[in-house]
Image (cartoon, rainbow, N blue to C red; front, side):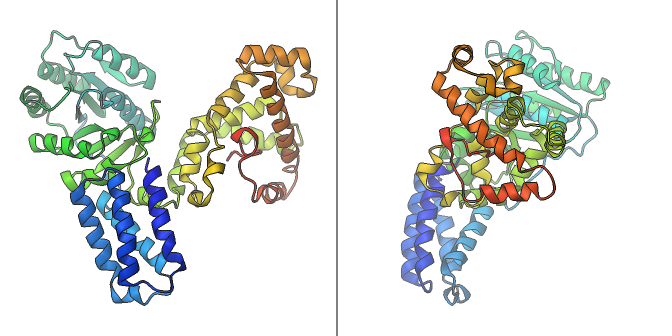
Length: 460
């Protein structure tokens, strides 16, 4: 998300770095470019106007005009205003209620609401250590109830069964009673979506809300709809006392206008971002981290949290001990590293969160190809255990068999083996004291190796 906006803002603000001082003229010119960048990102016009006025007013202050580093000062002002527009700080779910705390999910059809219910259930269980029950009150969409049943089983949440013949309010009341009997911490209620906001939908969800009195009413909206997402959220907020927003499909939206518009238009905070299709692809929304990402300064805190949550630390420790003991790094270890990286969202996700990525040329970024990770895993999975341990035995006939089994070409097998040989050399340097430091020195300045994978370039 925000790829286009990051590029445009970076280009506009970089022009000031060569300037001796800020002046009304160069501020005006820069703000014109920033305004265009925000409009192209599909940010709502009232939000753009307010943002530009605030930045201009602060940039023309006496302290700023006298600054010796105008570019840095203006970036700081833009960063602070971005944070302010998106909501200052992360607003956590308020689950301080007598269990079960009820979370009601509302939204239009196709916004990713049912998937978000499952993602939220998983997030609450894994990070907040809550016991969760989910229920579907969508009696209109074919297979909606079965979809939630399947997703609940996938994430390990209890599922309360319902049928299309029941009334939504009756389903919710029965689920709440069952959650109390089973001493559940949280009950998440999925509601019916429509293709557009209508009176029948609003009347039904108001009745549902009054019956179960949720502590959180979250509006799920597709970020791909841009500023329309903010307008739809406002329509729901006028009918329901929303407590927050879940912005979905942010991995597919390069503009990001919804994230910058929703708080200003609705007054409600974005609480979560859906960042992919998998059940663990849900992130709490931190405005200050997102502002940093928009300005190309990375998001190291989220990256550290992802590593802590998604990396198999047992395997990482085993590999470290194996290398310290001088035992060889084999293709099974290599595959484990690729799988860890895939769980982290791949190279493009990692690059998005690392500082300074905005300075890397586009042709280098273009070499990063997450398909390469999955292709590598498929190739190694097509090898025998002996071949993974002793890749030197992989010759002509074996290469053809592996290529056939993995749906690849022999040339790709050759490329992988060459890449792996480079990595083995690097891993040998990790043996003994100071090994990691030596390896990092050897990696310094190297970026974007063969096939889009950095040579030995993974973070674990």
